Image (tube, rainbow, N blue to C red; front, side, top):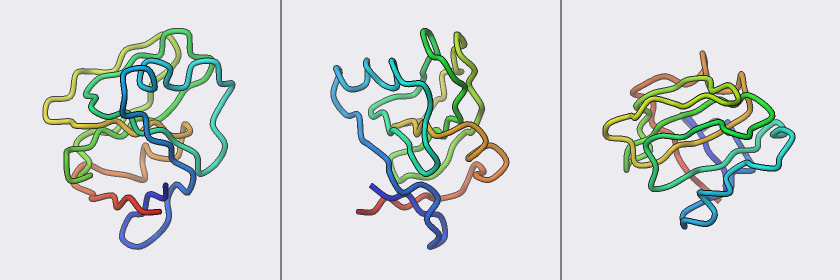
Length: 110
């Protein structure tokens, strides 16, 4: 799946984790994310970095893919519980923080 912002491709290899097993597995066992790669956890409004080996950026989205909150998550940390979030986009560290802002509307595509 592609994720764009104002017509520009931001991430071009995003997987969807929309069942309990896929959400539970998340990025565990990975050593990192490649540029353009990401994972959308849905439904989800909080994540943790337990057993993670690398930091990631988190983009919390409402049901219309509008950005509610963006932060960096280091291994062994827990994100805040974000009220109103329907999903969380996990992307390589440094690709969302400072580039994506609350109020932005991301566009999923094929």
